[in-house]
Image (tube, rainbow, N blue to C red; front, side, top):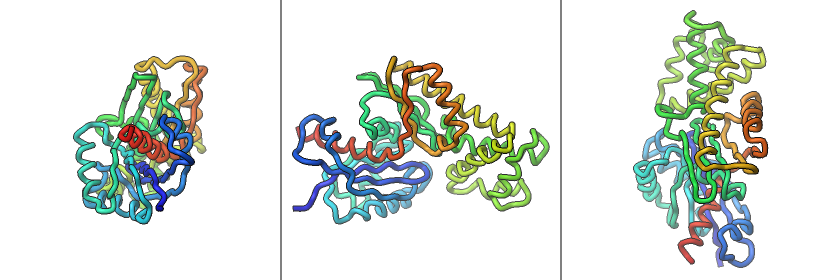
Amino acid sequence: MNKEYFLGIDGGSTKSKLILLDLKGKKVTRPLGALLRSNKCFEAKGKCLGHRSISEENFIQDVSNIINKIKHKKILFGCFSLADVDIKKDKRKVVKWINKVKSVNFPFIVVSDIECVLLSVYLESGVAVIAGTGSNYYAKNGDLVAKAGGLGYILADEGSGFSIGQKVLRAALKSYDGRGKKTILENLVLKKAGIKNMRKIITSVYTNTFKLDVGEFAPLTELALKKKDKVAKKILLSAVDEIESGIITVIKKVKLRGDFKICFVGGVFKNKFLLTEVERRIKKRFKKAEIIIVKNPAIGAAKLAIKEFERLNK
């Protein structure tokens, strides 16, 4: 008899990750009990699954590629935890695309990536913050749920890698033109882009994958900060302001008090200065809150697949 698995895929605007879980021992009736007995069996990486960043053809191909890595395993239920599916229209579009993938021959659900963060560390309540290429905020306290941000680079994404990268590029160009303060970011951008004339940066930015390309300039702030660059520090503090604001907003909406956990996901939190400053501010306001860095939110997607499977098979 073939072993049966639950699939979780966390797909963002930069990369994706697949996780398979099984259930240890006998099936249990309580969803959380099942999750506590789940066991990670397989893990794989894939390409971008952000439906606003790539075409339908590329999305279908990328899903097919990552699913083919488990083609000999029997999947009971799957969960696709994806960026940019916060509204029903986007979710319906993505479900339609996934249904075109021949290797997806199992039942599945599609949810926003922010909804799986808490579950990935066995939490039913708390705060989830994503600050990767995009940004998103979520809090849950019993039946109360709140969201903020998460509506893309035009409407939101403040404090994200894209937002920081865009400010880096603008500051570098202003420095080059003489329209703004001189900053080390100018030389760092030139070096990273492999150009000698800052105005040629246009060819590196206005591409089909511009959101990803712009976000790749965000880490230059940390290099510039080591040289005590004031412009870089200002950019990072602006991102801290936005992240702090998002966290406070969702906490207030669901009335979280006392001991609760705040879970961080995304490459932006790899910036030590930014992470330290966000933690300092949040701990000052919410003294008993605990901050957790979540390394593998795909686990939360697989756990949500287990919960949904058990709900449908009660």
